[in-house]
Length: 178
Image 1 (cartoon, helix red, strand yellow):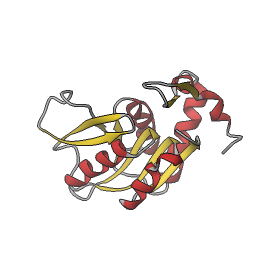
Image 2: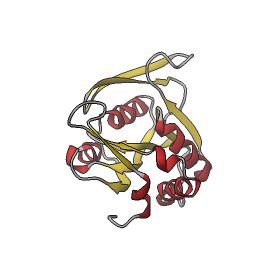
Image 3: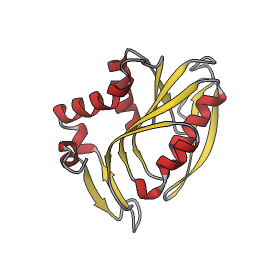
């Protein structure tokens, strides 16, 4: 993973959004067509033989990557939004972030009981938002067995947190520390 060419497309911004945080900015990757294509292809690859019915992406960068992964897998896309963005009846879940807290919402009719969903997001730090997304989807009866992520920050424990939920964890890149 250390020699992965995608690493050159991730920018590190120290002390953002607050002192002590090393923000991993994927904007350069999103701006490079070949890097974006390669990242999404690799994020979808483990699921090609048994694709899910839906890919769920967490707002906002999970929308970008998740939409492309859904297309590659021939799946529908479920947007998991921040509060107040969904126009129809929704359910919500609060969670803790590495540097605060947040809430995610989901339309209550976005998935039927027993439908298979793959969770996609850009980065896993503490795993709070991904865990909230999985639990929201499972509340509606979705079968969420796996997550595909561009970046994992293993020192923050998100992977372990998601694996405790029974999630098969896939990440293309890792960065040590925070």
